[in-house]
Image 1 (cartoon, one colour):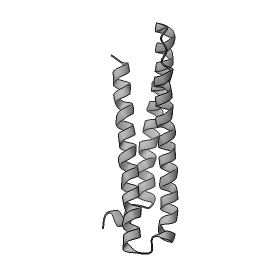
Image 2 (cartoon, rainbow, N blue to C red):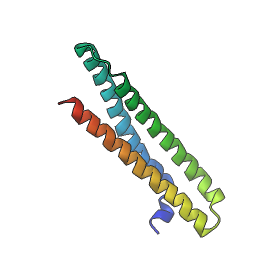
Image 3 (cartoon, rainbow, N blue to C red):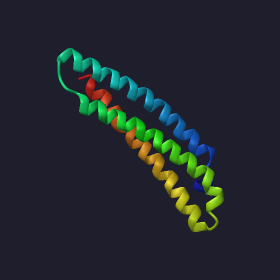
Image 4 (cartoon, rainbow, N blue to C red):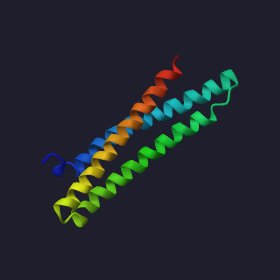
Length: 112
């Protein structure tokens, strides 16, 4: 019953918080990698590309969740379809948390 009401504006609000925090962190990590690259004359392009990919992935997740929230009432006519839509919403949240965790680990490893 929790998930039945979760794939709506609550999903977008939760993802909005995660995306906002994580994009700010991704930007800071990207800037710090640029500084380290210049200071130590090392090539960190692969790492910067990974941070960019994570940021774009979060935006894609948010847009997917937006589409899910809009389309769920239209397409989820049966209990099975509703459960499938709810599963997708839960998967998106878990994936966003995994990206947040990855970028947090990256931020802490930069400071070493």
